[in-house]
Length: 107
Image (cartoon, rainbow, N blue to C red; front, side, top):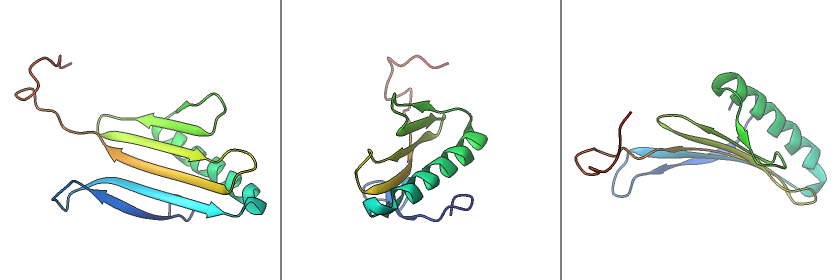
């Protein structure tokens, strides 16, 4: 559950490891229940905006993106007329060592 919104999901791990590097959640409905999906999308966007601030969004507002030092959060919903869906993911940003990548400027 994210706030009061229940979603199904799974976690991703780094190859050959049990260290989690991503969390993927989804709500899928039939097209006839698209209104329910849109309400879940709006509720999740509100919860995430309260926690992480205003998102970057696609021009049509179907995709919202929050970036942090540790990872990225993406919230999206289907196009009008498509199956009702809400997808939410967190993916960890890879740690890059300055010893491995000497050309990167660190701030």
